Image 1: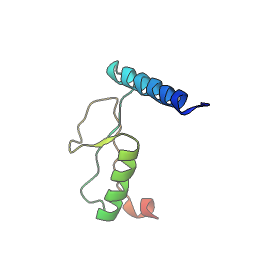
Image 2: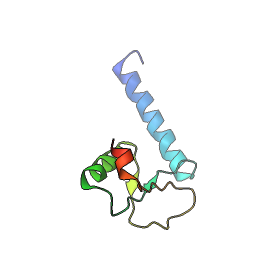
Image 3: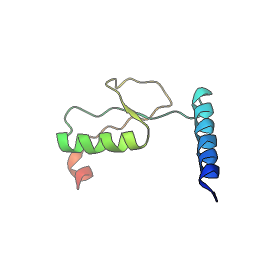
Image 4: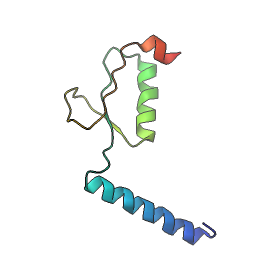
Length: 80
């Protein structure tokens, strides 16, 4: 990555690789269910982390196999 144009080409290549992996179901973005009893402040922090990692929030706890579900049961131990 010696020049800006070379860096742009490398980034474009990696974005295309990611797109191909997603289309072929080799890369699945996480679906996350947050329990309703989770504190509002912690919920916002978790949502931020999920967005940073290209996941998304689902309202359905019964989602397909191969996805990730985070159930925040013990909020006090996670928040500290």
